[in-house]
Amino acid sequence: MMERFYNPVFVKELKLRFRSFKSFSGLMFYLAVICIFIAGFLLITTEFTGKGFFKPEISFMMFAVLTILQMALILFITPSLTAGAISSEREKQTLNILLTTTQSSTQIIIGKLLSSVAFLVLMLIAGLPLYSLVFLFGGVSPSQLISIFLFYLLTVVAIGSIGVMFSTITKRTIVAMISTYGTIIFLGGITAFFFFLSMAFNQMGNAVGTSTSYMAYFWASINPGALMLTLTSSSMGDALVQVSGVELPVWISYLITYSLIIVICLTIAIKKLRANMKSNR
Image 1 (cartoon, rainbow, N blue to C red):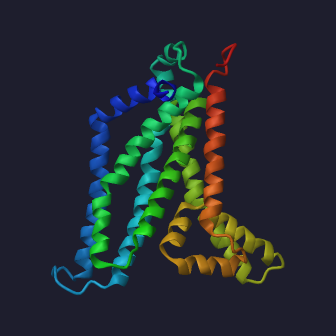
Image 2: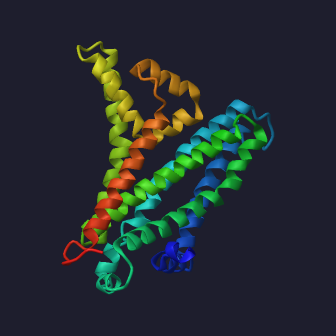
Image 3: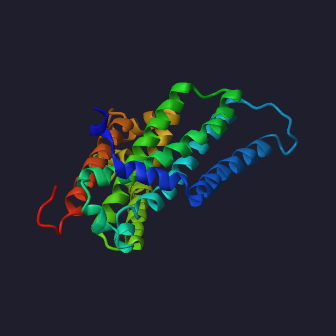
């Protein structure tokens, strides 16, 4: 039974990744950034005296900013781990050897993706002790933390799937990485710009104000930053409902959209992996 779920590609990639000094130097950089932010926030709040009254509202603010920061770090790190999954094999001229093994295209793609996701999950788990500092001061519920980490995982898998797809359909790693970062810029930055643009048209009372309010919800529903804001603050979600007129929570639309991204990107990657071969397994 277990042999059916055994993936040699995943096991090999996992061993190589966790034995690499580059991987753990990246983990150290990730934790260092979060530590610097938390230490700086605490010092500023206590006016560099190390003493003072830490209100739950301030603790919640630290949690919200830390959540956005961690999401930004995840979006920044994920392409570097996934954009070279297949293209690096092609550049090292080992892809043809990999394709002659008994592993199917699905096993190769899923194995490459899961090895990267496993390392990113390790990063999220390594950051949990730093997150636990927030509970010392109150203002945050455990359910919020759990929901945020679940959507972290969904975002990691979605961005990883995009990286693997570009790595499969392009011949160079640098091209795949640029394409993946371009997609992230669209999801995180361009959608935010369109959201505020739709909000501006809606406030101006334009003739198409009703449609732009729905568009504001659409752009917010695919933006990772907007999702984190609505998860950390219910008032942000209520404000979005008032502006757009859509009562469907943002996290549901985000879940559906990013699940479709995962399915579409992985399907394209699996189909294109052996595109030039006479028979696909």
